[in-house]
Picture 1: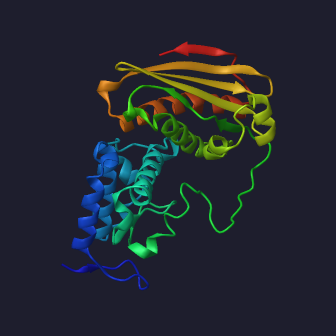
Picture 2: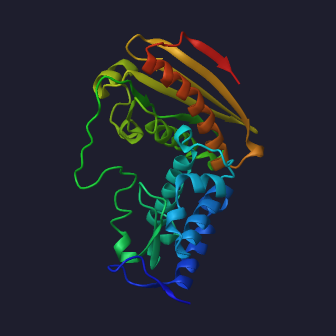
Picture 3: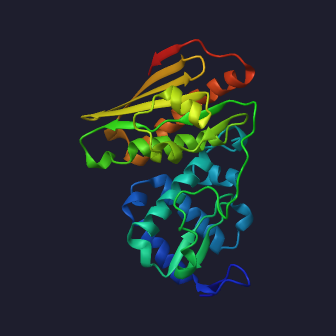
Length: 291
């Protein structure tokens, strides 16, 4: 079996070695319980090893991994980017806090591409050294002016099962990632609000400090086999409730990651409509519903 070589500066790695370590990742509980993420990782790895790097596009992943129809339009749906972000976070957790910390070969899917890189263990330290960081090397991205700025506030969760640890933040982070791909809005980093030292600050003061004019507030309640998520969109300048909805799901129908995906996709679809109203200057008038 021929060794795999990414470029002239990367040492050759045997394909069998790559497959061995990928199989270990696929058996990691955080990944093993998600059919979608398993298929995503398997597809990008197989296409890369087969030399079909030009096939690793958002559209081909949507059709081949997510079973989207042939007429699927990626510009109208960020589902592939959302799942790619989830997969990157699972890999990061696997290597930073899980059994992969000492793996000799590590799998990295750089942001901005779906082509994985297979890196010798020592060289992967930098790739997973900045947990969750969007920027590196002091890069600063200016915030465009004259457009709505949204903050997804830290999500609270009331539950008694350890399996739901991380569900609240998972929803908040994934929703923030989804909103990041919306045109015409700025998005405040979820981690900035989550880790900020402002436990007693009210929303109005936070909005002034972080300069956002819309806030998404969410609460998650888990009771028995039911999950209820209440989401509200508030205009922090007018103090008006722009939109609110209660989502209900049965836990037994989905595993935790699939539940998170389902909720985030549904919430994002509704917020997408609200963002259209923001950019057109037509604010919704306190629409409250349940579903």
